[in-house]
Length: 385
Ligand SMILES: *Cc1c(COP(=O)(O)O)cnc(C)c1O
Image (cartoon, rainbow, N blue to C red; front, side, top):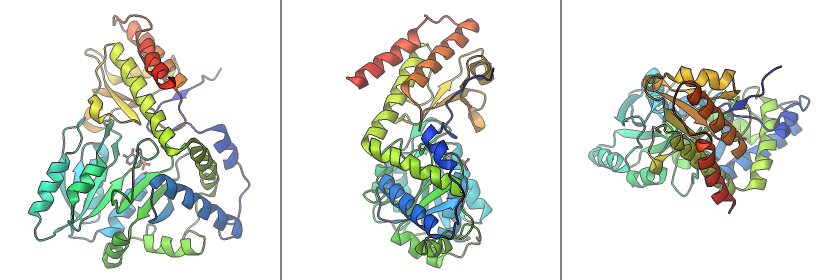
């Protein structure tokens, strides 16, 4: 029989049955009145989650398409961007800049640590000529399971004119992000993370300041032309054929999120984080990121000495149906990751910890049976009050 899977990836994430049903809605004319209404409704819903009045555009692309759009619409060839990189997705921003002849200056941090706002402030203070046109940074760095303090980074920018461009692809919905209150010029997200829908859509918010930069921008682009997206949005359309089925799913997911409320969604993701971390620690394993900066969306676990990530992940998947992610880049031989965002629940995490414990015992580690599960349950009980 086909094994039931518990999908604990930092994207794509499990999709609720109601969203799957909505995605089976028969096709509509993407230049007709039904789509106009659908586009307007989901755009308003996403703006609530972004906590913004800025323009919000939806592109048919994976999240990286949104990152590329942010670079090509707001930064010209030869312009300098301050890339704040704490992991693999920070490095991706650097590579996108290079691909479009934008000059990245990278503030690099050890993987597993967070960016320090003081460093950003210090670098901008030295930029007396105003050469830095944008700061590119992750909200949540998925490769290491670290949440950056965006509010502090925004404060560090002060009145320097650089745009603040944020990759919130895995962080939005899982952790608070106040686009307007924190002065975030461009915020990017994707559909397949905490939004609980399949891959296919990237979203970007664009501030007035960012539109002014776009008007001056000389980079090359075609599919990801945000000015065109804005003009079509005014007509209730997108420039090119949108992933209409994913839009139907998005509408349903937004209804679920609105019913839950943002504060409750953040609390739920903190619960997942605390359960997994307590359980993993109780099994004697080490976590990559310290508690103070730990991500509510994904947790990176160090592989114990003598084992490779594959030694743990393969039996987890094949024997127990628990699907985890490996490490990326330089961490690929030393960590594995639990995604816990979107349509996940505490019982999934309890099951995953039970399976992890079985795998460790099979590999000859001394684990006291039930230790991981008990620690996670204690966190869960406190949450339930
Ligand atoms: C998932 C993710 C992306 C985008 O990945 P795609 O595969 O292009 O959707 C970008 N940044 C972060 C932080 C992510 O977690």
